[in-house]
Length: 424
Image (cartoon, rainbow, N blue to C red; front, side):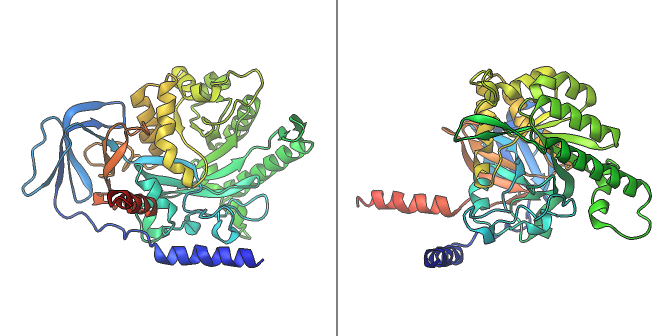
């Protein structure tokens, strides 16, 4: 017990002594990035292009961009400009120390919690956020976990004062977890059948039917918050994110939710490639989040998870790339790089980290691509943003505000570089 108290005291003291950078002030004056390779986010690449933005909004993109009077110019020669990357299906801002329960706010008690909102739990003061931001990830989908119905996620920009300031896509959808048919016993190395599978599926279906009936009835009489929280999803105003991996469960879940009129998005989708034609026909997008996992089945190819993005792209399925967890989101761009190494087109990987996530979450009118009229949320990178060997984010802008890219880890790195510069 004493050790736990000492650990908590140390964590608290560390938090006090290493505050996050202050959120950037609103953009003042025009900014022009010149002579860069611009990856628009929709598959278009502009070599030797320029991008001009004012008042937080992109005004011009192309080869022949006229400089606004008094514009600050950044030389992009030999560098790349990308839209800010998205980290979907993430607990960033909801989890700080996995081992300290008081810093974990990603799940509610109980099994059915559609009324739980990740938005209000999002911690903009998380010291993990600056480390992720420095890798070019400017947006996250704060996503609840646990139970059959986890709650509602929200799209957050990563340079906010508080959750209200950071929320750019509040309550973008509700998250359902399809029951797993089997679990793996690490001691015996065998799969164990889930004896409650049918019971759990029936329970989930009953809740969805009840919610559909409540919402279609105009919510008359007593207000039931758990059912009311499902109404936007049931009328297609917001998404239903279905966390599921097995092919047959993907089909069963999609058919059930489509029958109720929901707008379905698959999350996880390890075996989505096996039902790619079905997903394309039903126009169901996939948020792939298991591309770094081991193969699920003994007869799977050893590189099956790495090839899944390319297989979905070849089949014409709309998909985004993601990487579970909180601090792990700093590796999101490199997930795209690995997908490229296993057959995915480079610009398709960029789209899967930028425009497609924005479209899925309903914020593509402002974010996800570098087009006139959209938010100036972008990164200037020396090297390849998808390559961990060369990627170096030199500047980042969210709504035109130049974000401070320093963080605790970069400060420690500089501290010890100085040690060796002094020959200690």
